Length: 328
Image (cartoon, rainbow, N blue to C red; front, side, top):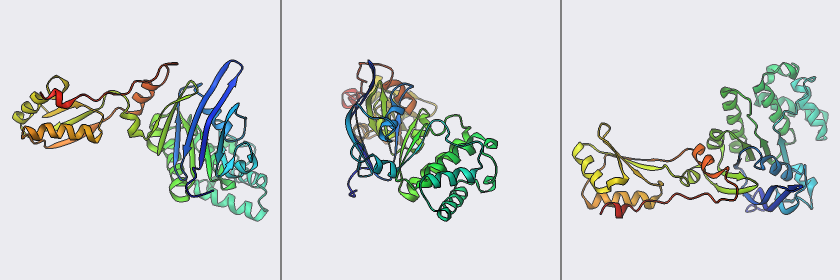
């Protein structure tokens, strides 16, 4: 694979079951060494996307390449380069943690010595060494999920698919999994394809996020870019005196919201450089100085609600108020 080729690329992926369209021509381009999160409501097509890209089911149309291997032309090459942790644990409850890992090493045709070395290394990395000889049936949900991910890593994959990896975990275990996932990317350059319904998870982990709804990608970008796509953002100005606050409020008129006690003025805006420059230009023209400026954007939950659940309708983008007009 060349240095410039994405770790995962897909064009026009489609999948239907009978008259139900699950994926309707999605395109993806995921750089190496990044976390890509695919968000969407139940039934949006997230798991189907993972199943197609991990060679578990065929697409009806479209093409894809993973780690330099063509999905249709070289599925064995794709399988050798990827690891998959599904929604449901693949851990064998009758085996110990060590035995589960050695079983995976055998499936990857590692030598007995290399398999035991790899198992010991992963048990240490995932803080499971003390439980290595205990049956997996005795593990907590967090321990089972860590073991499940460790088993995925036995084959040293370059691309890891994590299909809702923290579902059912308590907040502490979820945080631990986040640290492990981020470490795989930052320390080893692994590419992670993550599907999740936890918006905080995507916000915390993902370098880029795509929103899938009714089999269509309705938005893609960084978390900040997506947050700027829905209404509710504002630029908050803080002033040192009530007089400055009143003067600034008069400049922006009805579009601004004033808090006399906090000496702040909230002006609707998307937080982009042009918006901030327009706000500051209005203040400079009136020789009014703000003591502080912060940008407030909607959360990913607002993005999710705004962009999903409406088949056949294109999500509306935020329109930035004309700050120059409001100052006149």
